[in-house]
Length: 77
Image (cartoon, one colour):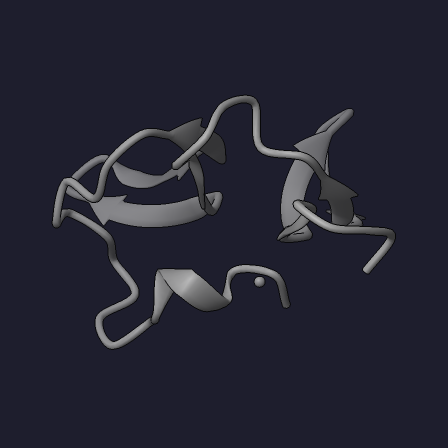
């Protein structure tokens, strides 16, 4: 960890130029007190897979797709 108050922002597989590439994780400071990182993820729908970009959020909406994941430890995904 680079210092107090930083959080690990997960790496993920993303699309660039029609192919999948690994986008590495980085250490970032949350943009405001109480913010947590909602990690990027893919969901499968009837039309196929859709990527949902990661973003900073201010409260747990209970709609995460990583049941059992403890958001207090997002300094690792």
